Image 1 (cartoon, rainbow, N blue to C red):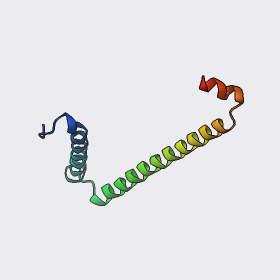
Image 2: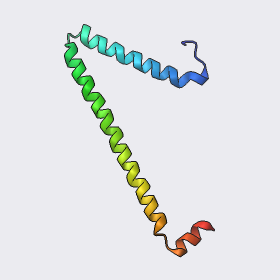
Image 3: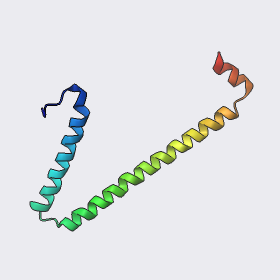
Length: 85
């Protein structure tokens, strides 16, 4: 399908997902008479939701990295010896 082999399977999946999303937007505007301005507003909300999710994930990773660093810094000598052996 689409002339892409195993190497490009992920790209094909993304391409098909984007094309399906475009079809859904077209159907909402054309077939169900949803105004284009309303769809643009909903798209903006979707983008904000994705950005918020990315921000929260970055904050969680920062907390995990900080906790790991603190754990390593305050490790007792017995714990340090156990982890080496």
